[in-house]
Length: 307
Ligand SMILES: *Cc1c(COP(=O)(O)O)cnc(C)c1O
Image (cartoon, rainbow, N blue to C red):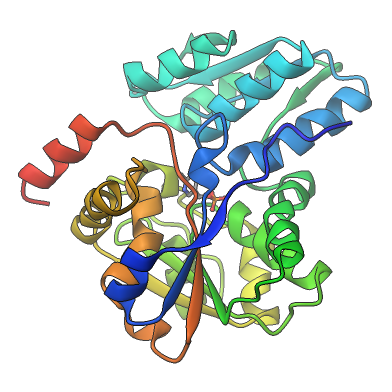
C-alpha cells in the first residue's frame, strides 16, 4: 500500500545558512498535504488499523493530528470523528470538516474532549493518539529514511518537541539508518517545555498548565519513549520564548515564502537566533514540521502585541 504522506523537499537554505553562520538544511514537512509532518505517523497508524479491520477512526485533537486523521480517513474511505474542546478555533474546525470528518465540540479543555472521545471507542473503532504510540513513531521515522537516501548526512538535527512523537520517530529513524551518532537539538517554547524540565528533573514531570501560544507543543507531559531516548541518544534541550518563535515564523515567510506555526518557528529560531547549542556543528538539518493552524494575519497580530 502506498503511504499517505508525500516525500518532501530537502535542500540547503542560503538565507538561513547566512543567518546561522553554518550550512542549514531544511526538510520541508510543512508541504505535506494536511500541512504538517503528523500525516507520516498518523497515516501509517491509520493504514495499520484499517488493515486490522477498523471501521471508524476517533481522535480528540483540534490541531494538526486531528486534521491528519481526517485526511487519512478520507483517503482510506473510513469515517472519522474528532472530538474537540470549545476553545478550538473556527479555522481548525473548518480544516477538519473540509476533510469530511464529523466534529463534536465538547468541554472547556482538551481533557474533557478526550474523555468523551475515549468513551466513544467501540470494538471496531481505532483511537488515534497524537504522539504516544509505536505506529506513530514508525511513520515519522520515514522522514529520516528519505534524508538518508538523499546522500546528505547532517552534523545535527533540529526539531521541535510537544508530546515527543516527532522526536521519538526521528531518533527511531536515525537508529534504523545506522545514524546513532547524529545528535538531536530538541526545541520547545517557554511555557510548553515539559521535555527540558523533565530532563533537568531526571524524571517525567507534568506541567501545571501550558502558557505558550505554540499550542501544537502544548503537551503537559512528554511521552515515556521520548524521555527514555534522552538517556539513550545524544539530545540537547533548547527553550526559546514565544516572541522568538513568532519572529522566526515571520522571517521564514520572507526567506522561504512559507507560513508555519510558532510550534515550528521554535525549531527555526535555533538557526535565526544562532543558539549556543548549534555552534559546534558545521551543518544542521531543521525538520520544518509546519502546521496548518496559523494564518499570516494571526502571525501579524501576535507580533503586534507584546508577548
Ligand atoms: C504536533 C506538532 C509538533 C510536536 O510534535 P510532537 O510529536 O507532539 O512532539 C510540532 N509542530 C507541529 C506543527 C505539530 O503539529
